[in-house]
Length: 385
Ligand code: GLN
Image (tube, rainbow, N blue to C red; front, side):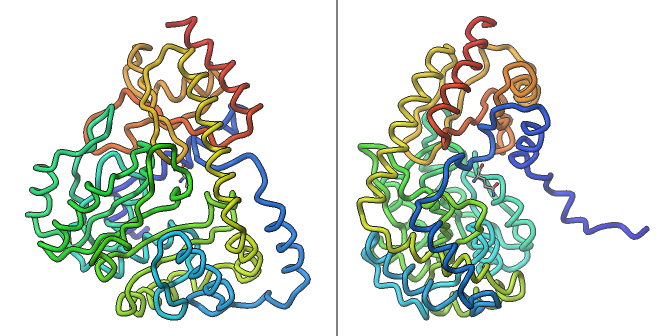
C-alpha cells in the first residue's frame, strides 16, 4: 500500500472533536467542544423554513450569495465602522475554519513562517502545515496569558509571512487591548507581515473589556485578513457559515482558494442567515448579557470546587488549573473527568506548544440547567481534593 503524505505526521486529529466523541460515548455533560445547547433566534429558524420552500437549492455564487454578502457587509459596517464592499472585500466560507485555511493558503508560500500565539486554537498549526508553512510560537503565559513584547519582537525578526491573532482568544479568553493590537500592527508594518485574525467571539465580551476590530486600526486594512463566523454570534455552529474579509487584491486570490476547496457555503443557509445579520442592536446586547450571566453562574460553580482558574475576558471558555488533583497528565485528568465526574473538558496541552499539562478547558455555552447539573457533578472534585 502506498504511504500517505508526510505532512500529516506533523499534527494529530483534533483533540476537541475527539473529546466530544468520548463525552457522547460515556454520557458526560459535554463542556469540551464549544457549541450551545440552545436554539438560534426564532427569526433565523423562521427564515430557514421559508428558505426551504424558496428557490435557493442550487449552488450560490462561489464567493457568497449576493443578498447574504450585502447583509454581511452592512452588519460589519455597523459594528466596526469599516466601509465593506460586498463585491470586493468578502468571501463567504464554510465556517471560520475554512476561512482560516483560505487565509493561510492565500498568504503563505511553502516554507514561509507564521507566528502563532501559544496556547492556540488547535486548527492554526494544522492550517499552517497544510499550506506548507511552518508555525513559530510566541507564548501567552498562564495564568493571565499575557505575551512578552521581547519574545514577540524576536519572532518578527525571523521574517514571518503572517501572524495569527485570535481575538477574543480561544482557549484563554484573553481579549487583546488596543495597545497590544497596535504593537502587533507596528511590528507587522515594520516587517511587512500579514495579520490573519480569527474573531468569531467578537460579540461575546465581558465588561470592562472591549472588542477592537484589527482591520479598523489606522492603516491596518491592507495587511489584515479577517476570518470570522456566524456560528457563535447566532448559535448556528452546525450551519458552517463564515467569511474572509480583506483588501480587494487579497480577496481576488482568496476566492480562487475557496472555490477549489469547497465551491461554496450552503445556499439555503446563507439565505436564512440574512435574518440573523439584520437583527437589531438589541439582539447583540441580549447575547452579551446572556453570556455574562452564564459566565457568572459557571465561575461561581467552579469556585466551589476549589480549583483555581483564569477568568475569561471574552469568548466562553475557562482554563481550569487541575494541579491540585495530582494527575500525571491533563489527558489522564480529562478522561477521569469524563468517566468519573461525568463532565467533559479538553486537555489543555492540546492548545500549547510549551509542555503545559495542568489545565483543562471547559466551556459554558449551555443552558442554566446544563451548567447547574455540570456544577453539581463537579462538586465531587471538592470532596476528592
Ligand atoms: N471553536 C470550538 C472549540 O474550540 C469548536 C469548533 C469546531 O470544533 N469546529 O471548541
